[in-house]
Image (cartoon, rainbow over all chains, first blue to last red; front, side, top):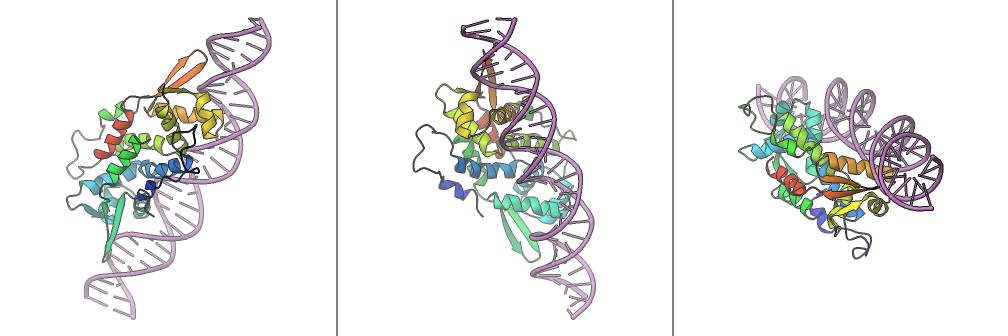
Length: 116
Length: 116
DNA sequence: CCCTGACATTGACAGTCATCAATGTAATCG
DNA sequence: CGATTACATTGATGACTGTCAATGTCAGGG
């Protein structure tokens, strides 16, 4: 459902920025808010941090459940949100699911703040 | 209630990063999440955008109510959240309240993503 | 001194969210 | 094939959030 790439089109109601409103359009704001909403939870921030800090660059769910002190379904839920926000990538190998940072996603998100 | 400056202390339960967990601590994550939570709403993003885009660098509530198509109490509520997150600055002159971007706050927030 | 205008606060309500227990699915092993 | 292991999904529940109507506050004008 790649959200971050979706931000390129900047869908606005009018063709150009409506004269009086040079600022963020409603639709564009909603898309950007989805990304920040994914970051607006302490446990999801910690998930990103753990995945990023891992030497191999990827982590399976079992590695993530314990340090957060959360149930496995809850962790799976948070990971799904991060994937749908375009921040994490999921790869299933055998019985395990490996999560890794989408390259450049954090930088691109940081860039959203500059182009407000 | 300056939140962004509060991030400097990085309050963690142990004195140093606990051996097995080089990642984000629980308390630190909660503080950072507060800032992103303030950004996790489309209308708040638009408020920031409008304030930033204004030539004078500041806007009063009456200028912000109309373009968002929201009631005045709702706009006041959103502005309060942005102020408490350390992103906006409020200055009351006479009957009007002027809101302006806290200098460097957006850049500092972008930096939070890099130091995950 | 009352009245108006600008903004904040309160209370209420509907919608969303984080969490968990229970269950489902799918791959591996014996 | 049956059992186990790793993960996802569903359903339920308590907590939080965005919004508005009503009210409060406070400065300025007549």
